[in-house]
Length: 608
Image (cartoon, rainbow, N blue to C red; front, side, top):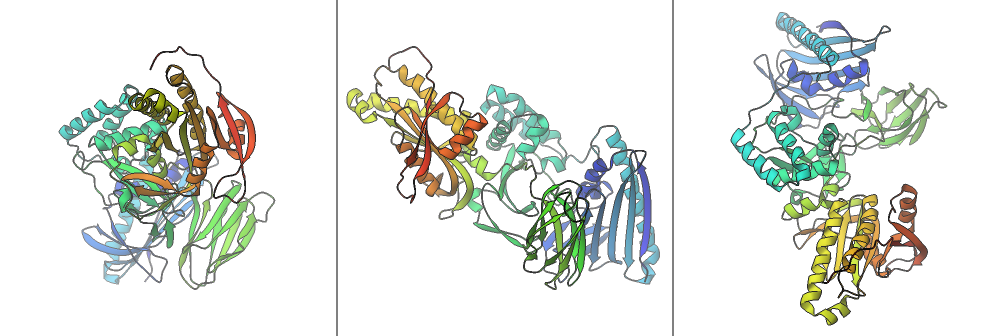
């Protein structure tokens, strides 16, 4: 039986790129045209389908296999659904965007429905026309909204808010915030109350910080405070490194496992805190009840780094168009095989690749606007995609959040499960210690000396927190501090020395007591120890042993980091006094290291 086909063409004034982004948000598009939310479950299918979807349409409960979407950014998108029940056997939706010579864009829509039984042909034909007309009207509305500078889908659904509970949580939040952060707290409360469901259902602090022109650390801090105030809930999303969508979600770090799995890409995920785990927020259920079911489970909006995606048939071939932007890309085939793609003008316009358990060749060069022809050698239906290797990430990683002082202070009970080790690919650690402290205890007595040590802890904690780090633990007179970025760690060590020198100068009885600081960055494991998030591994050992190489008033850095800091201008307030080879226990070779001292600033002297 021939399929039913309806086409529409809509001339739009908006640029193609703007329309691509809007129409690629298939969740909002489905909702706008009146589709119902979905329930999906993973499946293993001889086709490329990875999800079995259940929904209601025209009063019917329908079940279908959702095939991976196929697209070529920013030109075309195709969606295929194969139904297990209902009047239709298959549904195909396509749209194509063409730039017009006079400006604007032409949007071409195509709906194809394959009837299951001939008697239902009239019913399906009417509904095919209705679907095409609804989509065409929505495209016109999107174009009009874009022309007015409004959101493409206008005012979207806002679920009801419990104003009393929200008001109570808002007051609790504002009481805890610094004066400088009160405006952000108020804005967050308004967003929770009036933001569209689709916007507040997964709040990403970096994303809204950039949108509101707020410092990212400030936004993270306010969101964490809002959790304690009862306004928001915090969850941890396990992100697939390939599709970069949420593979799974846990409520606390204690629910993390070392390995997760992305069903869509069919790959295992090592749960690295700085790559695979993202902190996200949503309104507390007591404040606002949100609909959890999605309106779409795929599409280019969810994977903006993917420039082209196609279904690779068993034993067949697929063609992926190459973008006109030079750079580094990756070809990925479901299951994990991948290859490096270098797009540059001097390369051929077409390359052929073989996809089996691996992709051959492993590296290719191709010209912009060329095409990659992929041949299946595994005999299995899979999807294949071409993706940017470098993409600006807006993820607030669990690694970063675990270094924030508010998180360690407010969520100390929600640590990793005992025995679990979670890798951090790179973290900056600083150790401090006091010289002359033993003599100070003898000279001043335990009470005054202990008071000095505690006051110096409080002083350094303020400096560390100001630079975006936090204290992991104190050991005697020493501090172990963690920072997500090396820049912040270097600048914090300088500020710590400056602050301590001013502090000690005012303490007439604290003569000959100086601060020693060592800093190092590298891979680590994060563990739960004594109900805190602690770090262990060779990076910890090296950072601690570098501190032991410091004399009073000095900072010891690896030469590599010191050279980078000098080139990047991170050493303001300090100067290099020498380089040396540090022989550290546990290292087979000497470590190239650098000594820093800070510029002293005169201050008045007072008594302890």
